[in-house]
Length: 155
Image (tube, rainbow, N blue to C red; front, side, top):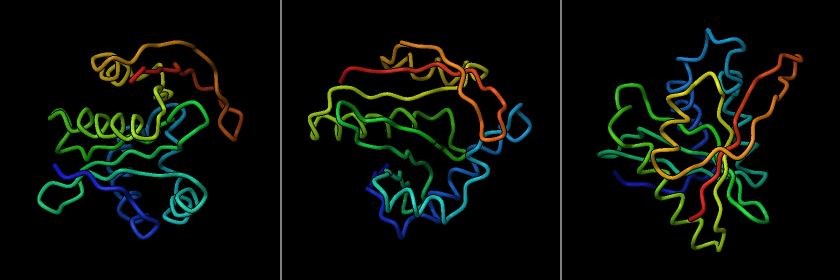
């Protein structure tokens, strides 16, 4: 897999990968807010400090992760692997690339938040060295509560 840094011109690719990956959560309570994003919201995120890595297999985009470089860490979100490629180690590979970038940026910590209701994602991150360091309730714009765990990894 070839992993490339995204530019704002890649917003449609990022959006498409995200929708394919997050569609599994459309019937969750509440549904993932990823499904409410638009190409414009992804473009705005990329134009305002958000970054992304896109994974390609034979020039075909199959995965992406969005992230922000913070003062003391890299915070990632919306990790997406298209359904037909899930379970093949692609998420781990793209997170490994993010870890290498974190080291280049002298950010020894990577963080994310994960829905408690999706234990397979928590297990995925734990399998590559992430630890749960906090539990919290975040509120969706409509006030719906969502239980999440905050996870981190020292790189």
